[in-house]
Image 1 (cartoon, rainbow, N blue to C red):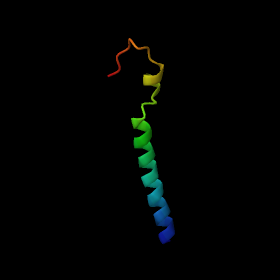
Image 2: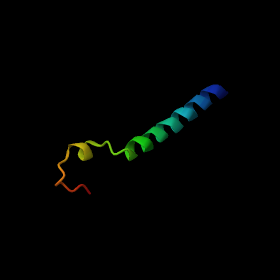
Image 3: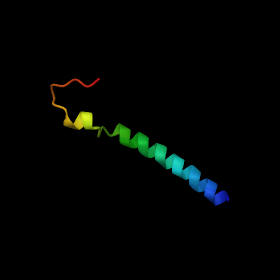
Length: 41
Protein backbone atom coordinates (compact mmCIF):
# COMPACT_ATOMS: atom_id res chain seq x y z
CA UNK A 1 0.00 0.00 0.00
CA UNK A 2 2.86 2.34 0.84
CA UNK A 3 4.43 1.70 -2.58
CA UNK A 4 1.19 2.58 -4.35
CA UNK A 5 0.88 5.90 -2.50
CA UNK A 6 4.52 6.67 -3.31
CA UNK A 7 3.83 5.94 -6.99
CA UNK A 8 0.79 8.25 -6.96
CA UNK A 9 2.81 11.01 -5.32
CA UNK A 10 5.65 10.64 -7.81
CA UNK A 11 3.19 10.74 -10.71
CA UNK A 12 1.83 14.05 -9.44
CA UNK A 13 5.33 15.49 -8.89
CA UNK A 14 6.53 14.44 -12.36
CA UNK A 15 3.35 15.80 -13.98
CA UNK A 16 3.74 19.22 -12.40
CA UNK A 17 7.46 19.27 -13.17
CA UNK A 18 6.85 18.42 -16.82
CA UNK A 19 4.14 21.08 -17.06
CA UNK A 20 6.42 23.83 -15.77
CA UNK A 21 9.41 22.74 -17.86
CA UNK A 22 7.40 22.50 -21.08
CA UNK A 23 5.53 25.75 -20.50
CA UNK A 24 8.80 27.64 -19.99
CA UNK A 25 10.39 26.27 -23.18
CA UNK A 26 8.32 28.59 -25.38
CA UNK A 27 6.90 25.94 -27.65
CA UNK A 28 3.35 27.27 -27.82
CA UNK A 29 1.68 27.39 -31.21
CA UNK A 30 1.13 31.15 -30.86
CA UNK A 31 4.86 31.77 -30.51
CA UNK A 32 6.02 29.37 -33.20
CA UNK A 33 3.46 30.15 -35.94
CA UNK A 34 3.05 33.91 -35.64
CA UNK A 35 4.83 36.40 -37.87
CA UNK A 36 7.50 38.70 -36.40
CA UNK A 37 5.17 41.69 -36.80
CA UNK A 38 2.52 40.19 -34.48
CA UNK A 39 2.49 41.30 -30.86
CA UNK A 40 1.76 38.53 -28.39
CA UNK A 41 0.61 39.74 -25.00
